[in-house]
Every structure is written in C-alpha cells, then in structure tokens.
Image 1 (tube, helix red, strand yellow):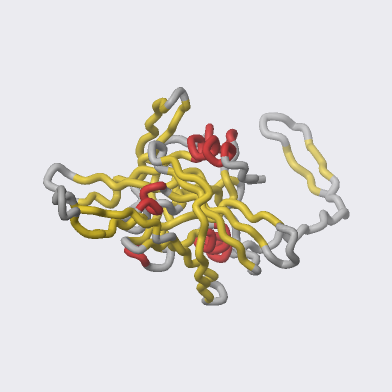
Image 2 (cartoon, rainbow, N blue to C red):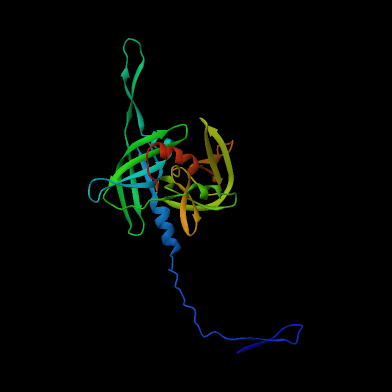
Length: 266
C-alpha cells in the first residue's frame, strides 16, 4: 500500500500496488548501417559507356517465365547513357571534300554491388526509354541474382519534403563503387514542361562527376526511400565546381516517366 498526502489538504490518498507485471515486448534490433547498405547503397549501380560513366538506381524487379531469372529496371539520367554514341570518321568525299562520319551506338554496361559479400557483377543493359528534355532514362537487364531494389517514395511522402530535411545522396563518384554523402534539402524548385509539373530538389549533399543518375534518399518510418535523381552540381562563373550545391530531379517528375514505360514499382 502506497500512501500519499495531497498538497494543500488533509486528505490522504492511498494507491494499491498492482501485482500484475506488464509483459516486456522485445523490439527487433535494427542495424541501421546494414539497413542503409541494403536500402540505399546496394541499389546503386555503375553505368559505363565507351566515353564515360555515371550511376543508376535499381527501381524494379520483374519475375519472368524462366526459373530463377529476373528482369531489373534501372532509373538514370539521359545524359549518362547518351555518351554511348560515338562518331566515327569514315573518310572524305573526293568530289565535294565533305567529311563522311557515322554515329554508332556502342551500348552500355552496368556493375552491381553487394557490399556485405564483397561481390560485384557486370551486365550488358538495354535502353528501354530515354527523354533528353527531362534528362531521364530507363535501362533493363536480366540476372539470376536477387538484387536489392530501391523503395520509391509515394505521393504522401513526397508532399512532406521540406527545406532542412536530412537526405542522402549515393552515386559512383569518378567511376568508383557507390559513395554516400549526407546533407539537407536547401531549396525546392518547381516548374512545368509540356504541361507536366516538374520538381527539383537542391541539397547540400556533395556530388561530383560520376554521381549523375544515382539516388537521393530520405528516411521515413525507419526505412530509406528514393526521392530524387542527382544530376547537377553548381559551377561558378570562373568554372569552379561547387560539389555541395547539388540538384536532383524529384521522383514526382520521374514517376510519370516510369509509368509511361510500364514499369511496376509496387
């Protein structure tokens, strides 16, 4: 029996101690670093062309009619894969003196990463679609491996994004394995293109050449979701690269492009 004397009165308040012990529910221990590796870093791929490299994000896995074979879709920037085109000199017209050239599609390949098991795998990819105006492209490849797929933020999540939100940018900087950088949303720009609304997130995450096409992620309810595609870092009038003033195309814009190309992102 616990007795308490109430303040300002002569009343004695008594409280019976309960003998009932509340059950203790053990919550699963989440390794945040391992979760970040799985939901962000391991969804990023290195995109390679004859003339350069960039990044991409695995956004979908499709079961096909072959046992243990999957088709994967990658979201990246159009300017990353556009460098696959190479112009060859074929010769000179002896009559007109004009130079003859031929543009050849030399293709793209990607490298996937499994940091936990320290395994990298290379694949040749197909270009499903590209939109130079939006600077977006979708790639496709098949694999017998179950690779990690990025979670794409839904409309409600995207509406919550505000300046000062913490974000993570991950890309294959300078052609290396995916490197994460952190920062905050510093601005949100909006506009229209062909009557379609577009949104660009400015952030203080650092991106350098090779980061384009990677992923900009934000945490929601202890998981990490793709909210944008980094594509640009600021450059001063003198040509100096300002890596911490970066821009990313919002998934709001990318979702329409994804849906138009029949990619399931459940």
